[in-house]
Image (cartoon, rainbow, N blue to C red; front, side):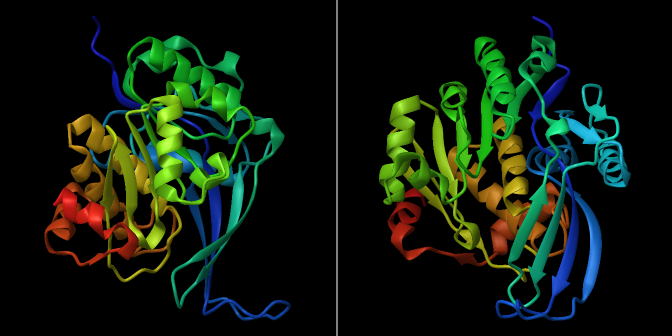
Length: 319
């Protein structure tokens, strides 16, 4: 059997963000002066792939990029990380996906306004088996659902594990889930998908229905909760000087892909991913500070954790 050329292939979104730093959010209808404006490349899967590349993995990205200035910024960022872009489609006369992100300096939290032209859509027939089977792991989001379902189906047929980042309900996403090995959602997704407000129950329902190895959810400033082999594991977040939370989840996913390929157990994978996400929050931008392996390990060894009380029992059991 031929050795895969890549460690991970990502299929999904990229975006070029305009970051606007404000001292605090004004009251509705009010106004405040902004402090700084920065153009920054981002996007769920693209940023996760940049994280993987920075950690030393061989990475391929599949997606679409516009031919405007924002598209150029995104292209040069990915190219500069050594990511294979052979199957990135550069769409003519189309602006790249963009976002305007307001960052509250007092908390580091952000509010996002985004737009993606329909012309950037990826379709299943644009993804061939050789584009997926060239890697050891596939990472996807949920946006172009038929296309990512097709990619996940190919991966499953060839025994390639699939990781997915999903933050909202997408039409047809039930076609993706049966082919997923590592589901890591936003904190809102499990309840929206199942109608169950108890996160433990919601994750159980999803995993029992679709049979993925790991069903997990990120909890923002409180870390991540996962279920595997009928057992829950909670990993607290690290306390850092938070400048901007943009892209924290994307970096978490990239770090998790690295951890899976490196053979980490689930507890170590979540802890490492939390550390990488936290360090990225110490600078502005979706890829503001993608840490090195050594920097993440240092934070794990010496960092303070923010434990969510309702999940403390699962952290204690894991330790």
